[in-house]
Image (cartoon, rainbow, N blue to C red):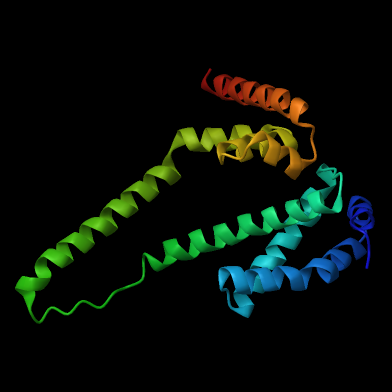
Length: 197
């Protein structure tokens, strides 16, 4: 079995064999994880796995890992993020599915129908507010302008990961990480202030 450092080197060198080795080494493990822990069908699992592998090929060269454990942790965190995105996307699609409502007994169902309409209306309103929010769009643009490691640190801290977890995840010393996080936050704030001017 190929070592994680060899896989990293292939990816850094943009060798197509890097994707092949990543797939051969982790594809079945990812599939088992998706099927057992997240109860995905075979097609759903492979869809998420392919997206994960594509992203890993693009992003892995930006990171350094101290050990195979750090490398594996990173891979599974990326996979888990894609699994969460998959479930968020499918949940929002299922919210728009048409439901059959039996109107034969209209008095009993009136309150239920009104409540359902209100729930759907509020969900649509808040979803459109989120999408149309200029503040969120500016924040996303500013994050995209940051160094990938700075962006990852900020996003992981925003998701309540501890410095120690982020340190393990990104392979950065814990002492250095706090300073890097502070500087990244300042860069982000400066970019947001510059956009307002």
